[in-house]
Amino acid sequence: FCVYLFRAAAEAGPHDILKLYNTKGNIINISPQLAPNSPHSCYKLEVVAADCNSELLGSDLVVALGFELSSMEKRLQSLEKRILTEAAETPVIVYEMKRQVESFREKLESVEHLSWLGLFKDMSEGTHKPSPFYHKRTLRKTREECEHVREKFLQMSSLEVSEEVRQYLKTPTFDNWQWEDAEIMVLLQVMYTDLDFISTFNIELDVLQQFLYEVYRRYNNIPFHNFKHCFCVTQMMYGLIWLTDLRSKMDSIDLLIMLTSAVCHDLDHTGYNNAYQINARTELALRYNDISPLENHHCAVAFEILEKTESNIFRNLSPEQFKRIREGIIKCILATDMTRHTEILNKFKAILPVFDFSNKDHRDVLMMIMIKVSDISNEARPMDVAEPWLDCLLQEFFNQSDMEKLEGLPVTPFMDRDKVTKPSSQTGFIRFVLFPLFIELANLFPCLEQHIIDPVQKALDYYTEMEKALEREKQNWAQSEKMVKPSNLKEPEAHPEPGGMTKPVNL
Picture 1 (spheres, helix red, strand yellow):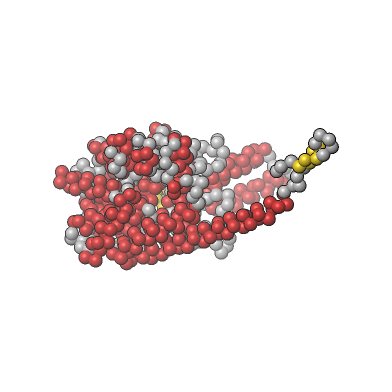
Picture 2: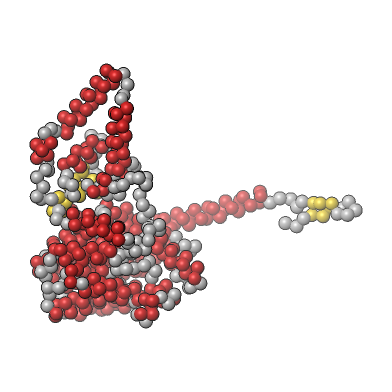
């Protein structure tokens, strides 16, 4: 297996992106827990983004190296046998070479995502992965962290992403966990390109890249509302645009508003929701008079980025176009405040029977519904993608409730680690928030039922069963406690009273 990886890595360019696929065609992580290959179940390692100008790919590599890797493997095996025969023991230098190969193998198995750049990460601090909860990282990204990702992104930005990945990117089943931040930025660039925004709105590529970098920089190191969440929401929005064929129903400028709103919708989120901001009387709550303080801040940060010429992807548009885009982005991002959920959903339900794509008011409500669906769409993804996101969300919730207790603020009930369980946090949310929202969107676009309704029903069944199992375990534990208690009770001890009498000690 390692030899196969060496061969695949050798055939790739220095900045190409490689991914490992299982027999079902799903991208998987390389780790020590990975099951071995067999003749009937072979893994596949592919270059999913490559420099089209590279000359050293495939058979050209054989010419460049002067030998085939398979023949080299056989030769090395033969030489190793010959050394053992002639020297009667393995020389020290061979042990050293094996140690270096083992070190390289550890890098292959321990990096979170396999790319050429990833193979050479510093292993001096051990091979464990960083915590997914970011609890030991600073809130703001460091300059070094940002520059490192920026350099990788610019090196990868000219790669041609494979058609297979481009199509995969249009589906709700996309697995974000298999992609590094720099690779995610490449995928965001692909979205703007494949929706023809680059040509339609005359967006220079270097300006788009600077915009994406500034967006990455302004998402914080927090468990849930981070850059990967930004990508997931944007990718779901992108997938919905393709699945519903919105390109034939709405103007390109509306699609640009929707995608860019998704990219910017949680900029500079600090991991504490509006209730905390208002109760703690934070700077944001005071600035925005307790009215959607976070969402207003996300909008403001987005337009701070767009105010800079070098990162303003709208700089070649007319003032009228920019005004329309600004109004649309503000409207979409403010719609993600969950305190407005019922208001926006009721508006959509009222116009649904007579929905008209030529009606601007109808389109505006649909755009708000689309970003709301995208924002809370994790449960529409495969369980192995969605469940880690729930773990991240609960970690962020629990951090907030801990802070509320510490500061003597009202504790948000659904964030209290002493009261909330993993399944209980989801069953009610799916029944009373997700389903009513998703069903109404599927009423307008019946094609979405298999993509967002069916997976959410599976998620509800999964967490309902988990909740029942926890309840049974709780009851069993309580019953066992009752059975154990009588055997632990002791007879009252006695001690002598003056005059030789004894008196029991009260329990």
